[in-house]
Every structure is written in structure tokens, then in C-alpha cells.
Length: 307
Image: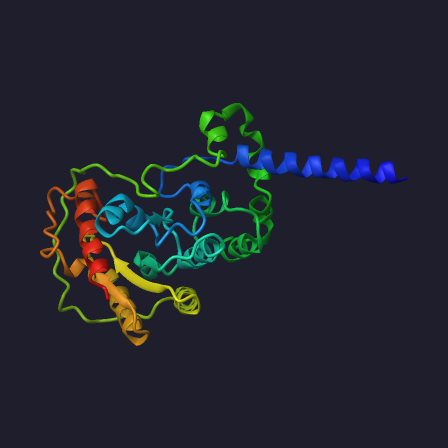
């Protein structure tokens, strides 16, 4: 009887191990949009001083290598495409399992988006490669509207089981503990050929309340940072700003003041950072490499003088 039980236990352990490994191998890798999530787990424990969160407006703006060069702070851009605040919040929870950062930096573009749920592609890029945990279950439940669709997020092998014939080198080496993104989540964008307008919104003070879900998670982010003695910095990267978007960022600025938080709106600082609207943008919403370097060096200067 004991031998049968032992064999059963070994079989179950081998099955579960094979299942987990197969799931990790089959999940789609290297989406090219910010952090690939997997490499975050390869960072040395408690080695990061500063972690960026948010959408492409974060991962195309802040360059960890420059932050390190200017401040000696180790940073990681834990941003993914169109990352909504509820995913940012759960990413912050995830980081606290492995890191004890001094700073959380949240890029606030997504406060101006009122949607309560994002597209599947946004969710997949952000969630699929998270390690399985209660936190992952919670972010799935908050991010995927239809309950019937959630099973393939809990067990993503359901989604990717047919990828066997697509597997390549990166699917294997990305599982190795020494596999890292060279730029710690920053995504370089080349100079674009679109004309970007330099709009002046400094005197535009109208505000608009954030959506109920965004406000809920911004408050949760603020509380989480306070509970863990982490300095939360809110930023808005340079864009071709419009009044329709600025009314949300004015509200964020008000919330920051009410909570004694630092908020940097780089759309007020075009001249200070010497931003060139003909040469420093990839498109109307994203900086190219030159623009990102200017903002990163300014942000590093800000960090050095923060206290």
C-alpha cells in the first residue's frame, strides 16, 4: 500500500512539474512592448531601488541605464502596453514579494482612459507570464470581464498549447535565471516622421474626475506605497498634449497635492528639458531615443535633488 501511495505521489509531482515547465515554455515571449515580465523575476532579490510602472509612455521614456549613471540607483521599467491602473497596482504587489524599492514611479497616462476593461492583447502581455499566485488570480479577475474567459488565464497552456511548432530559442533561454532584458524594460523608439505640435496648457486649469475604477486603484496605489514606506512619484511623460487629456492630469495633480505626493507633468517642462518637437518624438504620444534620454537625465537630476 505504501509503495502505491509513494508511486502516486511521485507521479503527481512529475505531472505537475511537467505541466508548469510546459506552460512556461509555450507561453508567448518577447512581445517587444516594455517589460517581458519573465526577466523581472530574474532580478537579484532586493536589488532594485526604483521601479517604473505604467503604459508605453513609461517604457518608451525612462531609461534605467541613465538613471543608474546619474543617480547610482538601480531601476527597472515594469511597464507594459496600455497598462491600466489595476494592473499597475497588482504589479506593485508582485514587486514587493522580491524587492524593497525606495521609489515607485507611476506614469499616469491611463488615468485619462475611462474603460473598465482593456483588450485581450493588453491583458495577455501583462498577465500571462506572471508567476501563479493569489495576486495573479486577483489581477485576472479584475482585468478579464467575462468569467468564462478567465480559465485560459489561470491555466495559460489552454491558450498556447498549439505553439509547439512555433517554439524558438527564446522560448527556452528566457527560462534561464541569467536571461535579462538589456535595458531593464526600456524600449528604444527611433525618430518618427510625424509632425508634433507644441501645445501650451500651463494656464488650462479645468479638471475632470477620474473613472470610479481608476480612482479606486489610484487610492490603493497611494495606500500601498505609504504602508510600505515607499516614495510614490507620479509623472506624465511629454506628449502632444490636448485639453481633453489635460483635464485628467489636472485632477491627478490635485490628488497628488491632497496626498502630499510629488507629481511631474513634463508637458509643463518642454523648455526646461530642451525638448525638440521636430527630432525628439517617435509619434504624437511617444518619445524617440533622444527625447527619452533628455527626460531620463532630467528625472535623474530631480531624484538627486528630491530631498
